Amino acid sequence: MTRRDTYVCGIDAAIDVVGGKWKVLILWALNDGPCRFGELRRGIPGVTEKVLTSHLRELESDGIVFREEAVEGAVRRVTYALTPLGVSLNAALAPLGAWGREHLLNGRASHDHAAAS
Amino acid sequence: MTRRDTYVCGIDAAIDVVGGKWKVLILWALNDGPCRFGELRRGIPGVTEKVLTSHLRELESDGIVFREEAVEGAVRRVTYALTPLGVSLNAALAPLGAWGREHLLNGRASHDHAAAS
DNA sequence: TCATGAACCCACCATAAGGTAACCACCCAC
DNA sequence: GTGGGTGGTTACCTTATGGTGGGTTCATGA
Image (cartoon, rainbow over all chains, first blue to last red; front, top):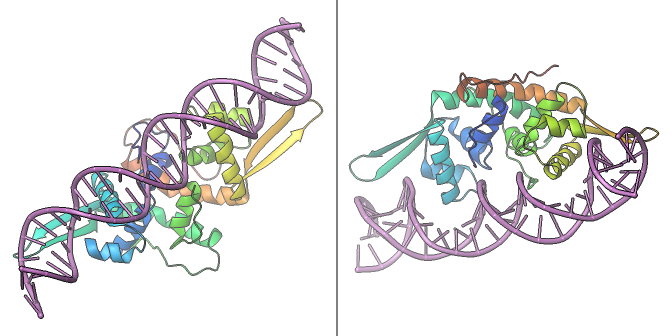
């Protein structure tokens, strides 16, 4: 992500956080509630495990998602969820999503990316 | 930009349009009104002519900016301006900019990226 | 006449982002 | 005791993106 240290405005910085190829898809998937790693992978067709891992790590270090690892008795169970910051980011993303739906994929099948679940 | 042909949601597509390293800066600069090429270059420190040209071409082919070349008598005078679509994109970008300002560069000097000029 | 500015184009290059594929430890079911 | 699922890691490899440094045309200014 080339994480820059100087931004000239807020969008600049926000795009840097959200600009990865699969980032918004991850945010969108997590918007419905916490997900396990495998659920995310299956829910985002085309993403590889490596890329999903690294994107999740970046989102985690940006404070957007929250990783919870529970080794309950037997298997390890890792759950990813949006932090409050992630929820607010999703809300801020909503108008852009509406714009994209309206102007970019007019009439094509598309899902809704609303802010609140 | 790898211009994909299938998008799973609107944000996905919008990020693809706006995801270049300097795209939002260009949009932001054009938000104050039409600019000539040299003005843009001077107004966005760090961007090279080649990258500025190619990003402007992409934004133009996406219908975001409008390029007007006027050879008025002597010199060629090229002016770039936002199309109505570009104006609406900027408006849709505003909440994301506000989010970035608030959460990413808290307290640092930053300019405002409002929708309407 | 030479230099400078505008608005590029072009060839090449460096890096970073993303993709492929293999491997790992752990546990469970068969 | 072998295979499958979970949740990864690691080492490459490819491609896209952006950067460097030149060249270009026309006009103006000194």
